[in-house]
Length: 58
Image 1 (cartoon, rainbow, N blue to C red):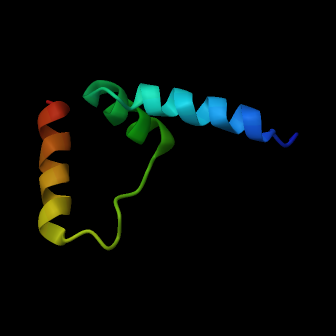
Image 2 (cartoon, rainbow, N blue to C red):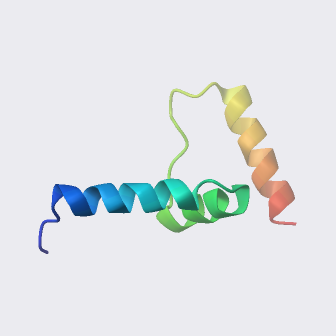
């Protein structure tokens, strides 16, 4: 795979920031990219995120 240049990286970063500006897009991106929950996050915060995900998937 070909490396991308600094200018392309900046464009991609700007687009991703735009995509995550709304809650719906942020949630979809997290699911799409299969982003893990921060392991250092307190369990109470992790459980709140889990609860929000359950509510959104109902």
